[in-house]
Image (cartoon, rainbow, N blue to C red; front, side, top):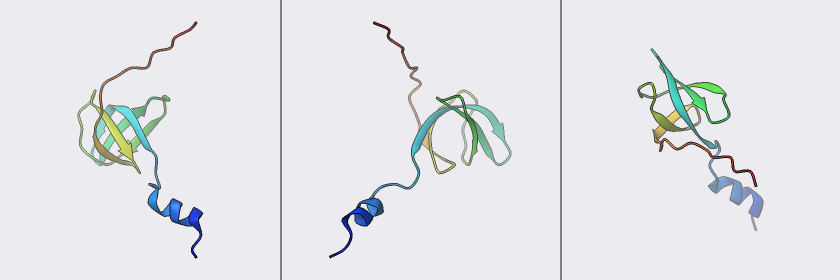
Length: 73
């Protein structure tokens, strides 16, 4: 019988998916500012101001331009 934990890891994606806004276009891809404020350079094509999903330093596709809301009670 195989290890169930290893089987679970085998079906999960290796890299998490992040969302961010394109802040610069470079010759080899784009720079994306994540929701956390971190900036990463990724492969793919997009325009400045576009919101994109990224995984593994590559653009997966467009993302909705939603902003977070802090609600204090």
